[in-house]
Image (cartoon, rainbow, N blue to C red; front, side, top):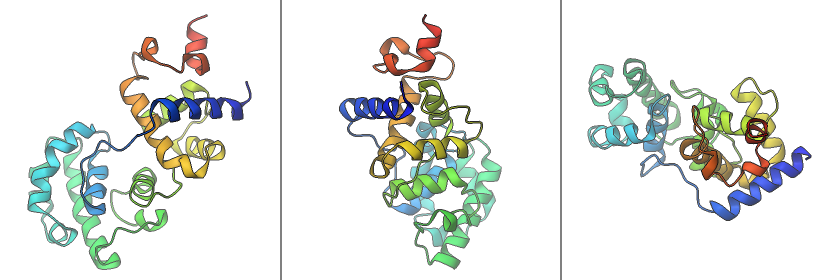
Length: 213
């Protein structure tokens, strides 16, 4: 099967079986999503959603967060991974967001990455979720699922995966496709023990075909 055909069949399946796919992080504005995505690095969305209500109550906008001491922020996020680094990143992010961007979360991926704690993946999430830009954020789920299905070939880094995916997925579908792959990886194509028996894509999946001959 040609790669283009594989992509189209997998896209068709997701469009039929997962027409609505959204982030599972709780947020009410771009600032809150930016904070949540920074916190979600190597941490589950469920855990982040447990922390952010109190965090946002104390720091409802980037100006409040910019004035904060990292030690106080740490107290609100201590249950997430790497809370010490993330507390410093959040305060640093807020300061640049208020000083350079007047509190408005930018839609440009390069500008977003000027802020501490915002790498390419986080910038792509903000650009696609908030601004519906044709950006493909690659986390561990996207990286794994894409490789297993055969959507990517010998991609060794998230950036290589991103480049291969955007080549074949139509621009207007990239924000949605990002969530398709994440949710499929989170609930079906698990890292250690994929639930192939519950997957509707086994006929198109190289991983399944290789392990079920």
